[in-house]
Length: 382
Image 1 (cartoon, rainbow, N blue to C red):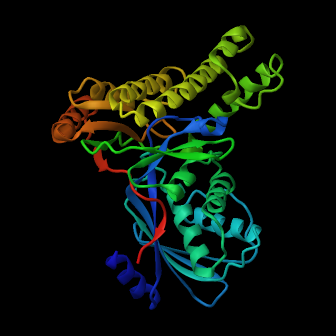
Image 2 (image 1 turned 180 degrees about the vertical axis):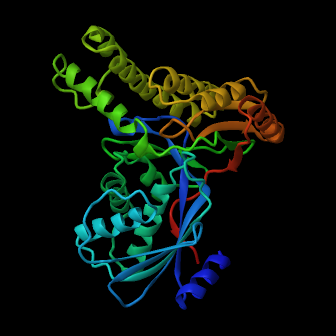
């Protein structure tokens, strides 16, 4: 991190506070957070870094090291507006801090990181978490990690136009080494589930298909789920979300739903059951059975929720048949990004070599692979 500090000093001529905020993986429970279901994320050792110092003005001055790009804005008069650039997330965080009554002052900021953008590891959530955490530390606002998670979520909604759930920000801020987090997205209650399988590595295989959730059908899927709830409330008035329904409930009123909405609802309800079963399996150390549930999730995302793509299906199918791979599925919003694979340590090198070779043969382009592990959440780096 000395290079970040050095670069900050070269630009701004003062010493910064340095905050690291991790990306996340989600082992199981995809597209369930905005349906008030459960998710099972963990923070990883790929991070966004924010170096920050007060500058005694009313201006926030930003520098993105990756793009060699400056941007600045006044802390006064900020209004929600969709911004398709990286700096929109930082503007949004300042705005929502102000909405909570926090007196944000002018700061100099340097942003850097090694989370691959568009790979499904939530670089934008990590950026919002890092910046919010840094401002909170610098000015002593006294906000909790959950407050900061909600600020990041609202920023995605109002400044990026993507109606994300709370999982990404929550995982980035609450991560714990050697544990994943069973998060109830309705009550916000959470439980750390042990994930201490040191004979395995988490291997992310990037399809290199770039996606932006604001340009995909993420919001459409959410609307389809809400449509399903609206129809089914006629028969079960007490339900609030798909989380409240069993498979029997859905099947009993299948004919009331159009085919597409039924498929979306079926996936979400089945995924809720897979996650609850998966947590029990991890607690009992049964990673093999958990891995089979991961592949079932991929099939659901591909065939029922229809957020996969040819490249992701290819990667998951190849991994599923590879010796030493315990679990595999696409991860993230969909339409690109990474597959997440649980690979026995002795098989990692052979798996990476084979998956890269097969991908080039199939698609005539190379992909990237990242080996990750579960780490702690957002923190100040001393």
